[in-house]
View 1 (spheres, protein in one colour):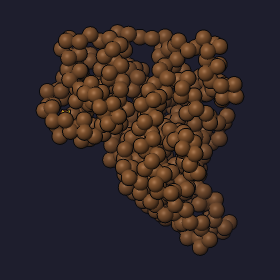
View 2 (view 1 turned 45 degrees about the horizontal axis):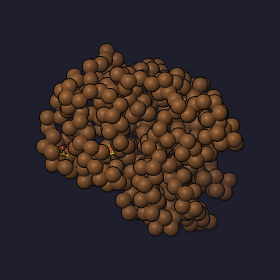
View 3 (view 1 turned 90 degrees about the vertical axis):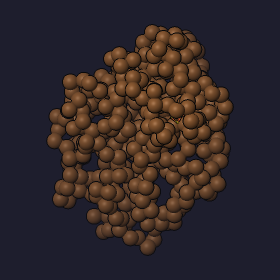
View 4 (view 1 turned 30 degrees about the horizontal axis):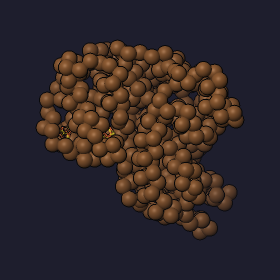
Length: 432
Ligand code: SF4
Ligand code: SF4
């Protein structure tokens, strides 16, 4: 696909009026304070790239990569420019001129193949015992691994041995009368890093009248590829997932990961697959995709049985950028939390400010990511919550690292885990 002909590149750049609104909300600019790291600077840079005034080289890539893809700039741009899409398109264009062995290995070989990805996380699980940095050094991997991985090894420090797929069945019948047939899009982050969330998702959905199918051939949603200059691979992954899920007759396609639901949304599919022959099938697929908390609150309208003995607990909520900015989903996760008896929801300041994780950003830009994380943790800790809830496995991993880093006695959870735990705490008769 021709970078210069992509709609954001061809049509949107000219709408920039240089107002600087995007700059004023950008979490990276807030830390770096340099125009080239600001979204307005990125727009200008992409324009120069398009017009051949700068070369598609690593320097330009590095400037553009100082970005979390959090979409805060895009939702605040008065001209409606999809600044993050401009950035992603430009990164791919530059990467195609400067491919690297490390990225091909990680994003094309491992991250397109669920079995290999799972094997590599088991390898990481083993590496945790010896220290990732030592292991990578001994194997000579330091030269090809991206960015700040050795510094970031603590972020990957709690990889479970057993994946989500290993804990849940492919077909999970509804308990009681079946209301809906659900395709569960089990993303890599939930599957490999937070398998307990996958288990809770399936249990809560089946308990509430949903048959849940977990297609075994599901592959990554493609968002990590898009953020790392691998747009062609993201396109192939999307096309594969569309084909797999469209073979079933699902009422809804649900994911508990804000990044996955944004990658599978109409808006992103239009950007990544725009103009391909399978566009109609892809839009039919996107029409069915829905975030788990939105489904539980707006479609199922779940209400949990009262339990006078329910323990009271204070919970605060962090908005994942790909849920709040990319999809406008802010009230539904909060509403779900409020419906759990005993939960007191306490808002943190700037709940929709990025946590600095953004998938692979904390690995490629460790120091910058930690500055952004520390702001988030200051706000979160002020609430005195016992639980820090969020709806994205990447945010969960980053926030858990922040909790450990600040020695805060708090548990990072997905809201569905609290729903599941509540069901588990009910006396036997009330569970049915
Ligand atoms: S907010 Fe939009 S119009 Fe204003 S400078 Fe940024 S990209 Fe340009
Ligand atoms: S996507 Fe986020 S980090 Fe990137 S330029 Fe926009 S506001 Fe800044």
